[in-house]
Figure (cartoon, one colour):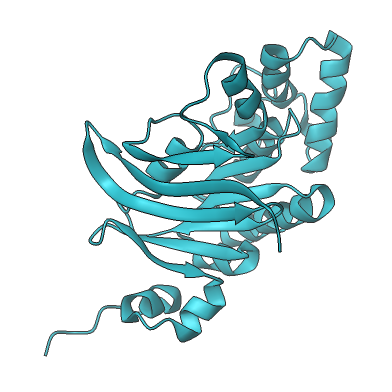
Amino acid sequence: MSEPIIEVEQLTVGYNQRPLLRNLSFTVDRGEVLVILGGSGSGKSTVLKTMIGLYEPLGGRIRLDGIDISAAQGEQRLQVLRRIGVMYQSGALFGSMTLAQNVRLPLEEFTDLPSDAMDLVARMKLDLVGLEAASERLPAEVSGGMQKRAAIARAMALDPAILFLDEPSAGLDPVTSAELDQLILRLKSALGVTFVVVTHELASVFAIADRVIMLDPEVKGIIAQGPPRELRDHSDIPSVRRFFRREAEPEPA
């Protein structure tokens, strides 16, 4: 039995004390790729941002490697945050900095490594995602797919145990998206990194996900969870099967 590295218990998320999703409970095993799914407005990104500590939960708790992220304070909270890496939907690279300088940023903030060591680590991380040769380019000088890979390299700068990816395939063509899927699988295999990925790209879901949780805004919670092919073929909820098969809602009689 694998050991959970993330434990979400009775989590309620929302804005201005108005719940968007209630009583979410799930775990993520060490080395697993978990995908959070749902239609537009289902709260996928809100759950992710709550899991990384950007939003306060309205209820419940999130444990990352045994530590409650919302209760942790001071040095303990910093210790938790050093254990995770985040890639935001846009990549969120600083346009005036080279790819290598972008990857250096977490090292400058959280370590006291000498400058030449930071340069070396930044180049090593870029090499892991196939971008060492582009390390001195600005984000505007590389493709969208390369920007996403550079953002993953920056997220990996502190050797995190968990990587959170928000819509990594958004805006990418199918070939570039497939290359990014393969990168995720390589990093999982080579480094044992745990991934939590928010996406609605079904091709990516079937390529990378060990397990998915599917959110539904009408029930304000998790409507299904499990391996994606199992849900596609055997879910007893028609709307879940239709989602995975890309089938339209039936016409009313």
